[in-house]
Image 1 (tube, helix red, strand yellow):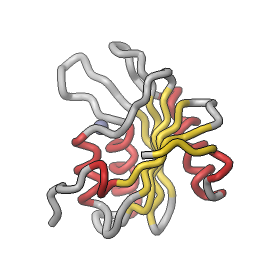
Image 2 (cartoon, helix red, strand yellow):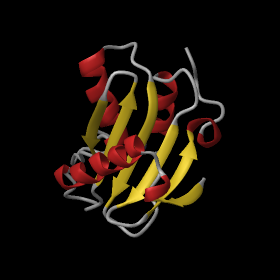
Image 3 (tube, helix red, strand yellow):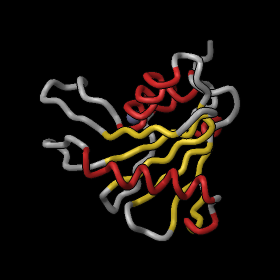
Image 4 (cartoon, protein in one colour):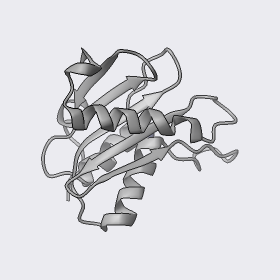
Length: 139
Ligand SMILES: [Zn+2]
């Protein structure tokens, strides 16, 4: 993973990051207060998601999987993800969890660029799915 300026990303990637930042405020996070937004770029469009917590442990969902579910709703089960952005409202670095990385593996043909952005900061962290989860289960 490496840190780069947002302005060094392509226009499409900057837009993806902005979409993730725009939906962080919709997160339902009464327990952790950590608002996370995500946007996935597929061959057919861009879809956002936010994290949703539940008082039942394990019942909530991460922003990334919520965004992927949103993409499946619109494009069906054969969609292919090309890139994903994740944005958050805290100072600590947030990156996709193992469950979200596995989900990404199941909806991609090739490597997926993962762009992680602290809200309203000039830099982002860029990583790649195959490095972050090299041995994910594939169909
Ligand atoms: Zn996750």
